[in-house]
Length: 100
Image (cartoon, rainbow, N blue to C red):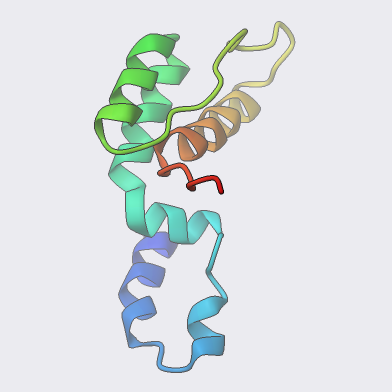
């Protein structure tokens, strides 16, 4: 978390387009923009509150995501489960891009 806070501090001072584009589309940039929402949503997913995670993400301006059959795999390691919850939360919290 400290690294992400440092990136959030440095990012506004980057002057060249090349430098600032290094983080485009990255987890670091998503976390800078939506970090608290990602954590809340991931916590809901982690404890199995899938509907609450979806409702929370949508209420925060996110596009939601397909959570059909969501849950922890039977043989899934604890750390991998946390990572998967975070990845899913990022997808849920980020606003959907308009089609067309």
